[in-house]
Each structure stands twice: as C-alpha cells, then as structure tokens.
Image 1 (cartoon, rainbow, N blue to C red):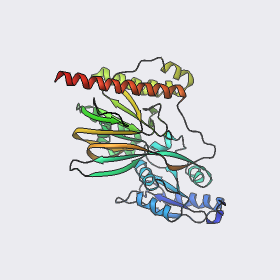
Image 2: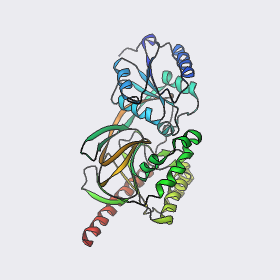
Image 3: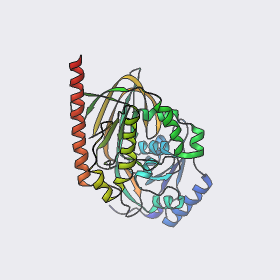
Image 4: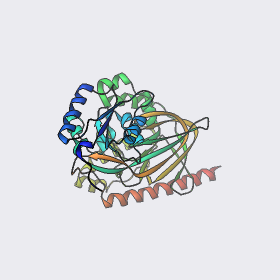
Length: 362
C-alpha cells in the first residue's frame, strides 16, 4: 500500500476546554503539523453531554489518521471508546489529575510540545480495551469501554467521596481524604463471579478491581503483573479485617509492589514474601459479577452510578496508541507471569473452598 502524502495527512484534536489552555494548545499543534507537513487539524470540543466519544467517531469517519485526546482520564476514556477498532490512532496529551493511561505507558506528563510532536512523528502500538457491560437496578444495561480499571466497593466509594475543590488544589493527594471517608464504610459485598468459562463462584470483599493496567498515582503499583497488551485482565479483591488487615494491604501494595518490584533485586526479594489473605489476585479475559445489593461502579476514575452486576471482557488490540518512536513499555517477566497464574489458581481454589464451607454451614 503506497504511503500517504504528508500534505494530505490530517489529525483531529478532541479537547476538554475546562482542562486546557486552548491558545497554547493551538500554537503547539500548528507548529507540529507544519513541521511534519500535514494538513491543518480538525478541532472538536467535548461537552457535558458527550465527553469525547462522538467527536472521536466523527474524526475517524472523516479520515483523521490520529486523534489527540486533550483532557483528563474521562476525556481519554471517552475518546478511546470512540476509536475502538477504528483506523485512527489515539495520541495522549494528559491534562488531568490522575493521567492513568499515560502513567502506565510511561509517557511524559508535563511537556505539551513533546506530547503534541509525538502525535505527528510517533509510532503506533496496539493495546487492549476493556469492555464493561453494566446491569442497573431497573434491569437496563449500558456498555462502556475502559483503559485502566473498573471497580466496585470502596474503590468506587472513594471516588464518590472525593472533594472536587481539594482535587483542584492538591491533585491526587485529595484522594487521601476520600479514602478516609470510604474506610468508615464497613460494608462488605457478597460477590458471585465467573472467571472466563469457569463455574460460578462466591467471595466476600470490600473492593473488587478489574485492571487492564496496574499503576495508580502516588507510585502505587496495584497490579504488578498487568500488561496493557496481553489480552488478559488482572483482577484483585481486597478483603481486610480491621487495622491489621488494612496494614497488610498497605504493605503489600505500597512497599512490595511499589518499591521492591521496581528493581531486579527487589523483585527477587518480593518473590520470597508470602501472599496475604486480605489481597487476592485473579487473571482472565472475562469476569462476570452479580451482587446482592446495588453498589457504586467506576471506570478509569469516573463514577458510573450504581450497578447490580457487570461483565468485563477484553477486546485484544482494539485501540492503536501513538507512542514516541522506540518507546519501551514495562512488562512482567516470565517468572512473574507464572507466579500470577499460580496465584490466580490458588485464589479460585480458595473461593471454591469458602463457598463449600458456607454451603455446609447452612
């Protein structure tokens, strides 16, 4: 297939006007497109009614080669949903508080010119999309894409409780206040789940997260074996009891995952530590959940209302992301993948045992 002449290549910019300095953005895009010899970009503004999905679909249908998503995690998620299986690539210009996908892809967060230049000169890399089919209390259903994580329980309650004014002033540190509020909720969920084509199982948990990526702000590596392009989810359930239980979770996530696993020596040391019962991991391409009571649900850090259940599936390689030429992604080693698979089997076996014990008690 012959190469497209540079002068006919075109980008589109889908931007959240609340999150960006539009004048600076227009200047950076004009400079980059001129240097690359591309045609003038199309500009599409998001709205409350449509945070980017419709704009991205229009841009792809109109022939844009790359769509620059300019805004926070909500804008990026919405644009990615609109570009599912499209011919246009997604370029990230992170402008929000979390910038979750950009962090997981090891992209520069605070250099507008560099991010814009990558959109016109970078290389495309196919990553997975998570697809969440939500079931509401009235029986209705909705389907949304996600890039990083889907969650129910304390995770979603934390987002519901976050103070937007604190978030504007202090960024991700505002989540500490929201965490405190969420932890005062002692409710545990009884979760009925099915992993891939396995039989239905039951577990109790405070939080269940389905991850396409593993890192959160604050150097928190929640899912250390997650890879954005492996065709699988990494799933974690948190079920601590009291102060000691939460301490175990904190040490596991912040110290072992966030510190030890960042280096080769640390990974060896982490392999010597025991798994904690308050934190259990699963791995699979499909995860279906049913709940006894409606719970708050979140996708990529945004609340999507209450659900009585959901089904998350991986759409492998459904999104092309434009990365700097030669950019390397973090990947778990073969030993870490094997360890994660074994941990998943043990967690499933434990869920089976717990369900059998519950049935016997009845």
